[in-house]
Image 1: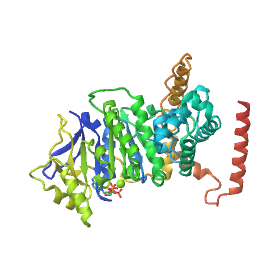
Image 2 (image 1 turned 90 degrees about the vertical axis):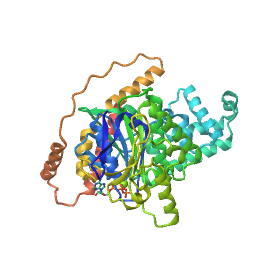
Image 3 (image 1 turned 60 degrees about the vertical axis):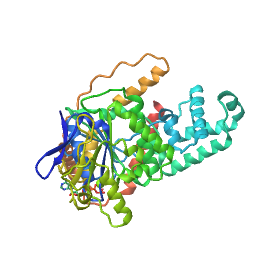
Image 4 (image 1 turned 45 degrees about the horizontal axis):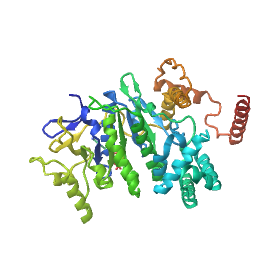
Length: 460
Ligand SMILES: Nc1ncnc2c1ncn2[C@@H]1O[C@H](COP(=O)(O)OP(=O)(O)OP(=O)(O)O)[C@@H](O)[C@H]1O
Ligand SMILES: [Mg+2]
């Protein structure tokens, strides 16, 4: 059976994670600097080599080294450090929006009515402004709305409007726009290797509400779109959430319940979800109970509370008479971990103390120029197909004939080094090298280009 090789015990025994059981989810935890992100990278790289696409939120930018040499697609909600991930209010749907706005059941009902009313009016709600306008109109026409769709109160409309503003203050508006993202874009392979999809998330780290909403939306999208696969020999996609405490910190109970439900159901769709965080206590108990594959790096215990957490972390493993789990948790070095993965019959193996493998890809971030070069190469991945899928779905909804499938585009074969060399050559050629940049001139050029684009848009 194929396995993801994790590392070796002191007596040289190979410890791995069976690919077939990788959809039973997992947890990587440990104190800061003990090797969690590197372990994540080791696993992500091997999933890719086994042909399994991977999604990972790159919170500190330190995962980007995986792009040398694994096939990597960079994503960024704000569109600056990767391809933008965007959706529409209509595509996001009532459940995700309700969670995003911390809506109570009455407010959720109001959101559902807003979506239904927009559909009935053949009005496609794209962004937060469209939803705001729809809610305002519902307030003004409240009597008719109540008699057609059911009771809607002014206070629930106001509460949602306030939550829209709160989300906007976290730059949540950036998430809405066209073309809408298609989850199929995460499921691509390149020459037999699973694509590594890295979500640039350092800005998102400061806006946990938005980060939580995006992750919940993506998981929910997978749940909606993927068919049941039963027992497959490998997962279809593996999700990694580094710094997972950001997802659950201050999260309302109903959001945690919703994530718990999605995590439970998504397993049978062939999706594995791995949380990476400092302590198991960062993950709510009901979600923790579903994480079958465990990698515990060292913990530090200076306070009584930390000592209790160490005991709890140690007791989560199936005992092994040769290993003093509690002592090991405290004394392990960087890159060492206590590991228990699921055995073939789905039972956790007795815990082992393992020296984790280093990835073969680069540990640590790539440079800004390397990212630019890779972005240039990855920009077309799946975009055209995404536009096509979206337009087709809209047509099918409107009972129109589906579009002709697009022809296979010639694959981008240029190498990153080649693009980097081009960048360097362009910089050398530029007469401005070494001179301070001329902001006024750049501004004027931008104005002219914007004017031309505007003029073209008018023509179209
Ligand atoms: N398996 C390993 N073998 C050798 N060195 C390792 C290993 N894992 C990690 N290291 C070293 O430890 C450093 C820190 O690792 P890493 O960034 O994975 O820690 P972390 O637990 O994610 O920390 P933080 O909580 O701050 O994000 C790495 O840059 C690397 O030098
Ligand atoms: Mg880390």
